Amino acid sequence: MNPKKIILCPNPNRDQGMAATKQADAILREMGFRTVVCSPFKDQKAGAFADYDVRSLPQEMRGADLLLTFGGDGTILHLAKLAALHKLPVLGINMGGLGFIAELEAGELETLKKLRDWDFETESRMMLDVSVFREGKQVYTNLGLNDAVIREGPISHVIHLKISSDGRHLADIAGDGVIISTPTGSTAYSLSAGGPVVEPVAQTLVVCPICTHNMRFSSYVLSPDHVLTVELERNGRKPVYLCVDESRAFSLRADDKVQVRRSKYVMKLVRLTEKSFCEIFAQKMLPGGL
Image (cartoon, rainbow, N blue to C red):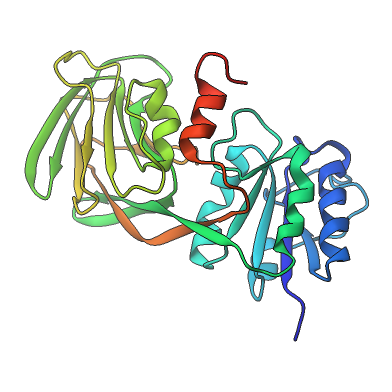
């Protein structure tokens, strides 16, 4: 039987000198796994990955069995779309700040030895299909793990949005914008904007306004079967942008319609520990935590 192939994806800005990557690589190779190192980002500086021979990630994903990331949650978000499309499970090593998506901390690399028998659980995380329609034609599409954010441009101003669900009016927002998030994304920008914390394995859509002028509307937690449409209203030439999982912002026009729905794709996260989400949240976010 051919050995399992594991891709190591280090963020060189987080894993200085590739120290964690080298340690994990040694552990995995000792167990008989085949490993390759790929950059999670394009156009990395020469020498950023120490003496590793860095391969093409899209090419190496074919035939791979696991993607191991070294960085913060941002590194996992950056790779989420590609991993989901290839149905490749992801195991995150947190080298950043809070790290809600990553499974292990940098000091827990010995836990990788639990991969030896390839008997582990995976957790399915809901994702979003996000599209923009302009004059009836689709001009943008993306796949997100965390959220779709529609907000004002670099100059702060109030924007007006109309949100409908399956063709029926849901809410009008006047403020800085709106966040439509998955349960995974509920602990990201949505939480900062006052949205609810949702267990990440749940299947829901969270609609959270950003600095709304309507104090009667805080947020909605909806069934994932809804198809949400966001339209711009009375914004004139004010710049409004769409951003999916911190990707490059897409400039919206006055008559554009942004459609958000649950995707058929999911992200598979490998679980090697018994830590619950509530335990992690309490440890990292509540008083007395990390």
